[in-house]
Length: 131
Image (cartoon, rainbow, N blue to C red; front, side):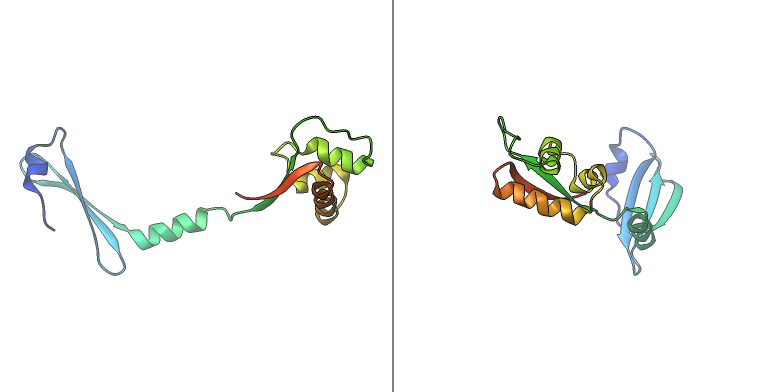
């Protein structure tokens, strides 16, 4: 491992941490070096295994559909009960799935109603969000 001596000589704190990524499978060797160039500790990390662990721990992405109401005052008198509830809950945060649970309907039914409300100009759009 090559070492920049000035990094050790000019360090503000000791030990200085020096890492080198190499090998197959890829791994890191980290040295902790004091002001007299003595190695105080060595740490080896298997990068591939760590990445696999991190990927396994990560939760899968979830698609959500969020209805966005038109700005301004909307006259909901011409809408049926379900349509009016969907428009009133279209706050940019509440998903179609959550609205479907409130209405005790399937997500597909609510999505179809929301798409109709977009065509009727009560909703700006139904936005697909991936979280």
